[in-house]
Length: 310
Ligand code: UDP
Ligand code: MG
Image (cartoon, rainbow, N blue to C red):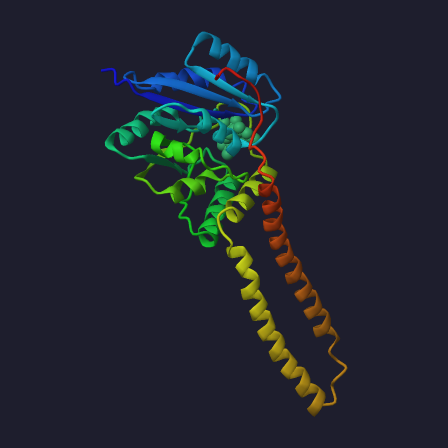
């Protein structure tokens, strides 16, 4: 039965020429027949033939929309563009490499039909995901939970469904350092989570280099919490207290013994230690200051060079 409702699918693509055709076929196979759909491919400044592949797909199917960036603006900004232009009654985002299995989509939709406004997914780690990726992601989520007030579960993925009500609110988020995995749980609404098992990448290699991952992790923490700044207060107090004790000891040595010149090791040690902590704290403050500086410019999150959306 035709419901008259529309599903938007948002797919960020960066150098995915080898995956896209198969991805598109698989995706369409799993979209329920009783809904209209649109698929928004966001070409995030790919250097291969991703755009050409998308153009070919769009020619044969009017439901396929595309947005092509003027350069690489990163995964989260590509997602944002897709959400910004999505016109459906709900929007589903997933990766173009088939690691987020499209066969889970009917499940996402049935949760939505049950009345959930946000359906998150949680990646079950198994052998197809490398040990390094598993470990780094576990550590990241642990730090995230400790340092921010948002409860992000292990393996939370950018594979989710959001209702148009949520989409409308999400369009108002114009921060430059986007971290949807933090924003979405923070938003409230009726949320639920379903697990999925990630496939191996269909083709190509991961577009998240170690550098991108580190940048993403820093953003995750600093965009969500000022707790790292508070760290300097705690560390500073502990060190000040220890220094005070050591001062007492130094005074004792000076006044009551004749060993007063032998303090070289401890002097060097404490100078280096305090110096190190100082640099660390300056770095943390600098990170926030830098983000304020960029955020303050209110620059757009992405620039579009080509699109078939009016
Ligand atoms: N991606 C993007 N811009 C980037 C990096 C990645 O649009 O700068 C896309 C990529 O094409 C894929 C998704 O984001 O659809 C997730 O990237 P990837 O699969 O490389 O990450 P991984 O699954 O290894 O974490
Ligand atoms: Mg992937």
